[in-house]
Image 1: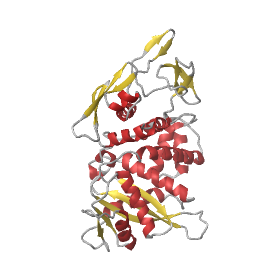
Image 2 (image 1 turned 45 degrees about the vertical axis):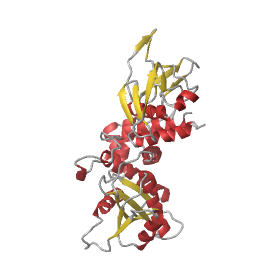
Image 3 (image 1 turned 30 degrees about the vertical axis):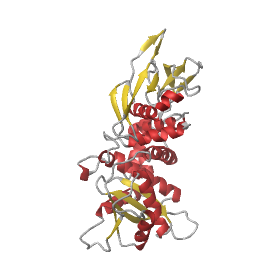
Image 4 (image 1 turned 120 degrees about the horizontal axis):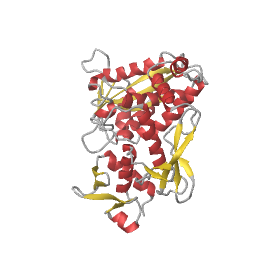
Length: 391
């Protein structure tokens, strides 16, 4: 029998291919992955979701169709009406994806708030296990407010130094934080958002651009402080598919970033545009080799005077240098990778692109319908993390 994790993975595949249609707040149509034109209806009856597929009928567990609907419901952040219960204002949670963190029951209500130093957090009460808890939306156990954290993230990836961010937060928010605290926020939330963003499948074109640039890293064992940052970007959507930091520029290094881009996009490109580096030719041939046509073509641009160009990825490198220019060098390779991962999230989901008429690459790649903000992105990443760990 299929495990819960297997069903969740298949649910992500359904979402990635747009196979879930909302009919009403309690009814969804999920199209079959194997039979063209066939679909299953998922409905909510009371606090329980039911599906007409054989997996649900035979095993009486949440099938992949229900998991897909639950993930959509999490992203929608549906609001429910408030009702009175005695002297407390409580809200019955009608959605099955909101459950008790201790016993997994759906029989929970809102009950008061927990006050922290800077904000109030909604508290829930489980009627089955009689325990109180709060829902982690990404900012649990944080002394700073969500607004302070997201402002720090935004300024950092716009190229402002950490000490300048410390001064900005103190002047405009009256909050004193250290540059070390800001770095910890960046490391924590970049890791969380990366796990969420990397499971989203962008709709990309068949043409990719790839290039490499140097990064200065201070604390290395040897005296050569330069590392290579490899990047792959989609031609049509400008979606930044992959970023990889390596010590050398050999075939194996080029293959790493190409494999990462292929894994994220779930596809094999028709053509890859690169500069004249010899490693690309062999890496593309080895990574995307197939006996069946059409094969991935390598468009090699030996110099900048060539009629074709690789300016798209060069402009991306300009964005990276804008972030890196206020630093005297990155501390280590882990710091460099964190910066590159965070920049990729900022570039794809937050920063509007002039070549896309003000849209973000994520919107162009059909991942996000609206322009994402740091706050909403962190909440979705936290919900995804909760969904992954629940069983």
